[in-house]
Length: 274
Image (cartoon, rainbow, N blue to C red; front, side):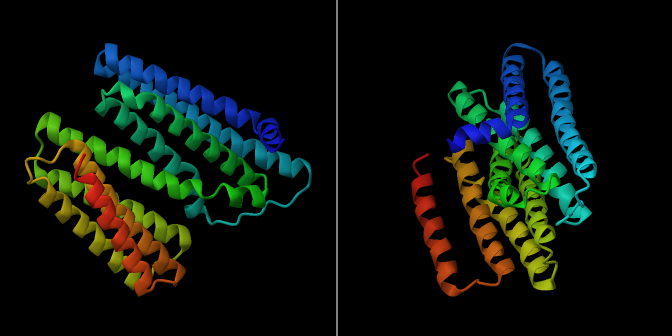
């Protein structure tokens, strides 16, 4: 019953999500059978659809509130809105496109399209709920942004490592790119929660550099496949992100750090067999 109510109230978001996923399926077909330039053009055309959905959601939600004489409440400042409702959705889309271009293993396609549908659906529902002042729904779907940052990092990291394997770009450049990616996503967290204090900024810069150094070291192992490199880098990023979250929430303690280290060790052990 709840599912039917959700579908009835979010038909527009469902339709746009399905259209985007169908477009991604076409991108897979294009990158498989056509020149790269067609894939790039198709990516930009499909991106316009994403931008259109976000813009029209904002426009009609604002107009609806004005017509009903309901005061517009902005719980986030303009910079936070841009990060959550424009930058992260765009990064999600382009990271998926990069992954499609980098990965030719057809076993991933159905999983990728399923993840993409869920991400875009929750994004559209969250954005619409925010601008229509439906704060309970917006709060319930807000977790999508934490999931998005992990997905974006995973797909972009894989794509960067693919450049290393396909075009033999230098280890220094790969390390630098992933260090910058880490810094960018860590900074989004600080801006989102308004915790731009010196200790957090120093933590973000230090961890971004450490990730770059870690990537440089693990690329030196000849047995390291693209999947293993991506997995190991993702583990380190996840641990640093988790610790940063607890620093921001001011509940970081030794037990939490130990728990993250144990998770990392277990994940590392599992990754060895990849």
